[in-house]
Image 1 (cartoon, rainbow, N blue to C red):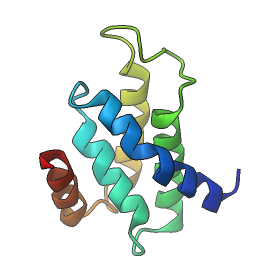
Image 2 (cartoon, rainbow, N blue to C red):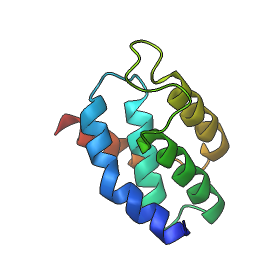
Image 3 (spheres, rainbow, N blue to C red):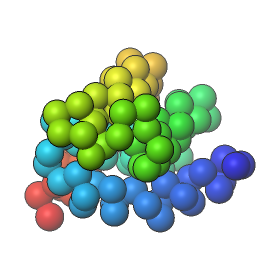
Image 4 (cartoon, helix red, strand yellow):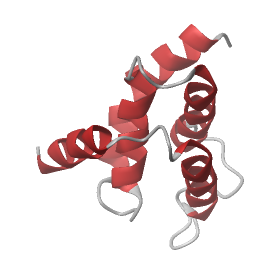
Length: 106
């Protein structure tokens, strides 16, 4: 899958996954901020690639630990998201979190 195809897949499926998970996961604001960081033209290509892979893993129904398993289902996703956040923390801007907060309040 090429970079443009990955980003289009994320754009198409991201909000559906967020609606499915709702506020069940404590890191939802970080995931949404990462999404806005991915769409930001000022984000480096390296950070975009890392974010794209993390969000693809989050969206994907194929997981190391299936999301339907109560209490454990999102632990693998949390690990991927947390690792990616460490890699891209300099790229995440306050405006990405502002947009994430606005999205959560809608």
